[in-house]
Image 1 (cartoon, rainbow, N blue to C red):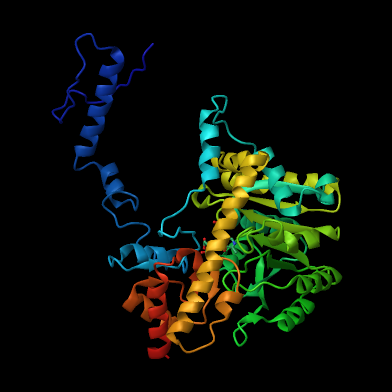
Image 2 (cartoon, rainbow, N blue to C red):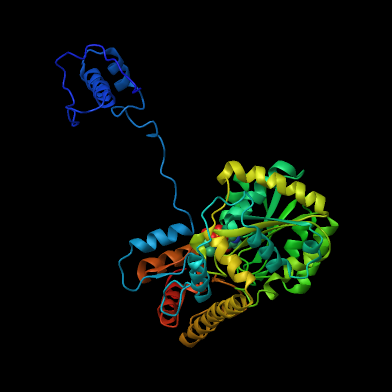
Length: 467
Ligand code: PLA
């Protein structure tokens, strides 16, 4: 039986909806017409007191927004550079802000091997779009842990590693931070000074208290190793320490292997818990294994650690948001209990991760030919960045730009920490349409042979004309 609605006063002269239904219309449509007509009459009745209360209600169309007091937030210091760049109409504009790889032609790059993997996935009619488990794609997790810890990792063989697929590097850091805030006794995390700008926000919002340790020495444009050892040496026992696995952002300064060894010994002796951020594996040296050495040394001593991985840069999967959080633990039993708690962190946050990007990565990592092809493309990206360093260095030297620019070729990874101050950066943006973060970081991956002369002109003008 159709639902019936009775409307008091349906015979009145208020405006009515004419029914578009034919004479054979069902009792349902005439009933719903009556209901709509009653509503229209109700809303049109001026002296109706419920109407008064609607217009006076803060969420009605007539009142001011309940969010009128909200103040405009600042743009993100890194992603906001792209927003400003997009508004600039100059044909000479150059975006060296966000770390995003560009070709020699200045175009974004989708790796060939990624195109192939996607083709395989599209052609596979057995694939479905069901939800992934809370922890993500099993193959992806297993292969990601192997990629960073090494195929022969004892921790993996002994099932002491739990890996969960997360929303790229950022999501992995956040899930790790939330887990620590809930289940770890020491809520302080030490991050390098300086570091990627988002670290402080991610960990603070996760519920940790953020402190810094000395890392970079502006005088030498290198590592402040003594300061680092002192600060970690006086951190409270058990504190978490964020370490950039390689290609430190923004400085491009990494510890040597000997220095890593000293850091490891100090941290283990003080029971400091390492949390590695690996956003650039393969991008620093061009070798996936070489760039994983810091992490592997810590894992090899049998101690515990957290590890956030991103495939944004090394597979060019920026917008696919694909990454992983691994936690290396003492026993398989602890690992499985920790995983059960990671699921409780993830489920109310985003339920389960997206399937496409992780499937691309798993397809590439499990096929020997695709994997080899990836390493070749990755090396080509790293080599192009290294060659940009040499071209910019040579070009500044040839122009006689005042200053020692050797740090451009000594630093490693996607960025050069130029030493330019915020005023010089603002000048370069205004006069030369070159966009970069105000701390003087430039993304070498955004540079090409074609744009090196323009950047050289701009740097030269900035250092000779702006104090
Ligand atoms: N960790 C570090 C050290 C990073 O530099 C970045 C990205 C991430 C994590 C997070 O990357 P993901 O979430 O995309 O995997 N840093 C970029 C982009 C490249 C950004 O700021 O979001 C940067 O320009 O610094």
